[in-house]
Length: 305
Image (cartoon, rainbow, N blue to C red; front, top):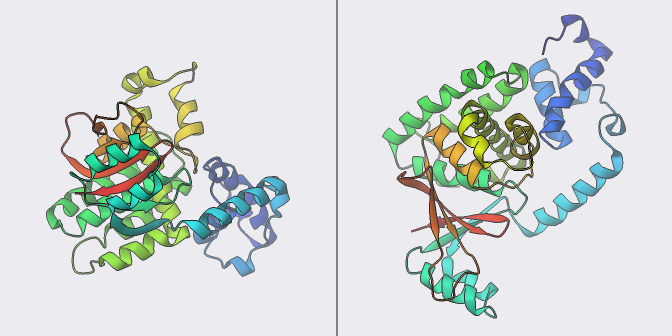
């Protein structure tokens, strides 16, 4: 995206905001994050910016409804909760013999669970927190991951992702990754605060979504086999991967794990035979898992052995 410098002065910030907002709103980012991204590049304060009326960017009724839903969910669920005994789930399913039996079997393998807000971003947020938490205790693995992430920006730009918006999300992501080891290493409490700060946490989720999209499109010949309904891979990524609040499935997991060289094990709490243990699948196939997630229909939480 080429923006003439003549558009960046005074009241003309309005024009710049509108030109950039189309990509950001495609990600379904909250308006606050759109504003943050634009103003950070312009080097101005929000108070000095002539804001675009919300009705000129997105339908006011949709914005209001979205914010009401977000508020209701936020009041009940933190973005990333505290670690709890896995047996706490038994209370939720005490009247369901199938789930009760499966959870009892699962508790023989996994000890704890950390709940993630069920907002459609739970896979990416759960992955990010779980792996970052692991890296706090694995210095060499952190260095390897740091180098892998450093190469993702140029790869995505080479695939046609807009440099202007990508850099902001990449910088925010790297700022957190750089503090998972080394002299300025954060502790677990700070990591929890970061993932529960909506602005920072959502930036991390956006970048993980973009990395996933890039991997799907780079290896399109392989992943195209998973698509249904005649969509192209680019259409699928624009509609189901890059936007916030879109749920994730096995294809997202394979792509993200492959791109970042991180093994993901997903345990499925399903309604199969009552005597069977919940099935487990590793993404990519035959990987060594570093992240463990519990999947219940439409939602992911973090598991601990």
